[in-house]
Image (cartoon, rainbow, N blue to C red; front, side, top):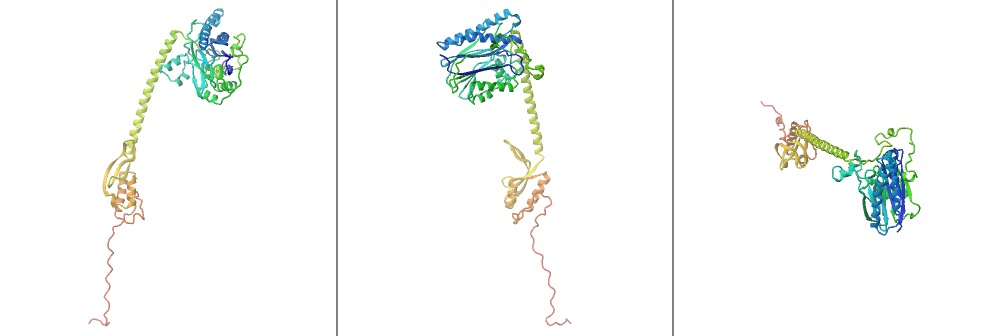
Amino acid sequence: MVFQGSSAAISHTGRVRSNNQDSGYSGSNLFVVADGMGGHAGGDVASAVAISRLQNLDGHYDSPAEAEERLRDEIAAVAGDLIEVAGRRPELAGLGTTCSSIVMVDEYAVIGHIGDSRIYLFRDDELTQITTDHTFVQRLVETGRITPEEARYHPRRSVLMRVLGDMDAHPEVDTFIMPTRPGDRWLLCSDGLSGVVDETHIAKLFRLQQPPARAADALLKQALDGGAPDNVTVVIVDVGGQHPLYTGTPTIVGSASNPDGVHVPASRSLLPTGWLHPARTAANEPTHFEPDTEYLEELIAEDRRRTRRRRLIGITSLVLLAAAVAAAGAAFYSWTQTRYYVGSDEDSVVIYRGIQQTVGPLALSTPETDTEIPLDDLPDAYRQQVEQTISARSFEHAEVIVDNLRARLGDDDADDDLADLTDPDIAPVPDPSPSPTAPAPSESPRADGGDDQ
């Protein structure tokens, strides 16, 4: 049955390369992305050859199993076509291409894949990568030697382990069948998109529910805004959905849309592209290559050396960090032991060495002197200060605070006139004493006013 849904395809040279080695196809039931490799013109030819052969699959199938068998055979047959092309044109030796394709059959998506172009499924607001990259770094990820994030920037990320090319007439192609349903959105893309725009941004864009053509344009813009060091090809397929059905002429984009398949357009800049993007691959160098066994052994040995160096650096960094933390902790603890404060234990005033804080179960202070001043004998305001602790600059300063506290024992007016206990110059409270005796009065004159004789 004819696929019921809508689709769009777009391809762009990118900001660095001078020719487009990608090809894409969007038909009635068939959707393909091919990313060519092999130098200035070889990649153009390889991806165009793949599209030319595979577009014959855009038709009716009695079952998904039949479509899967046909897709596997036709993708593998592309390798034979490339061997034939290289035989006729020796200058194209080493050409090859990735291939990621979907054949829609009833409620199923029949998938064929080889290389590092990708197929994603956007369902229920979540984006999932369906295919597995056939690359050296993906093998490192699968064995736990690097993380997916490290794989994005690994210097050998362009090394393909499997590809359609003129070196192997019987390539190993991944094929499988997945159920699909209305509302699904499928994305096929070359690594010119997936290597620049991450899955988070792709999913965010798809949640806007734009039609396939607008979504493809938006993804291309994000790749171009990100520098687009490689060709960018995008094919979007919506199953059912709210957008008008697409049943017109198949769309072919990229190098396959050129009848000759090998035309190389002139560079768009008078300056060497390497000046504009010095950190990226030169414009006309291949983005992928399939290594021989000897080269792979060298890569594996190099990766082992890199892993050992990374492990050694990691261990050294941890040791240095631990030493720095220990030294800082020791210095901080030494500093705390130069500080003092006045506090209390259960029933008396105590001078403590250290600071009031704790680090987990570790207290940063220890009792230095028990003054034996009973807490209960202090006026309420001073007792509250002691219980909340009073900081001192030194042990001598702590003794001044204790002397001031001792001087206020029994001071009934302390709560009304609170003194600064940390001030060494405050006057102590005088001890109460009896009032001085009044001077004795002089003898009064005799009542008769006479003098003694």
